Amino acid sequence: LESSQTSLERAQSIGRLGGWSRAAGDSEVVISSQLRSLLALDTEKDTFPMASIYDRVHPDERRALGLAIERCETQGLPFALDHRVLPGNGSEHVVHTEGERVRAEDGSFRIEGIVQDVTAGKQVEGQVRTLAYRDGLTGLGN
Image 1 (cartoon, rainbow, N blue to C red):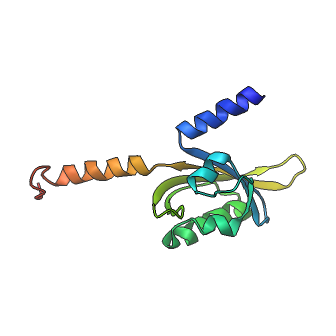
Image 2 (cartoon, rainbow, N blue to C red; image 1 turned 120 degrees about the vertical axis):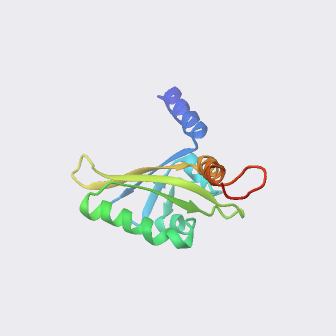
């Protein structure tokens, strides 16, 4: 079990992927060590107030994420969206967040999900888009 846990953490680190979970209606969210690192939460605890996680989301995108999580919790609608996070160290990352509602053994619901840093991929997409419409040497439109 310990070896499997270590392998999982290594895979999450390589993939810049972190997990999260929250009991329906709860104000606390449990996050993985990789997600804690991605959001630059400098503590060793696993549980954080949901508000402190939203504080790391770009202000222009907090509402969309909040609505997606609310619909997931109340209506059972899974979600997937890209949004920006501000880890607090002056940088900005683009992440892909997914979540779904799952039923626990006791019949209650949980919201579980992943957050993956896709900043590098988005930068490459932007460069390809620019090169498709602009000359690479002059910068003039094609």
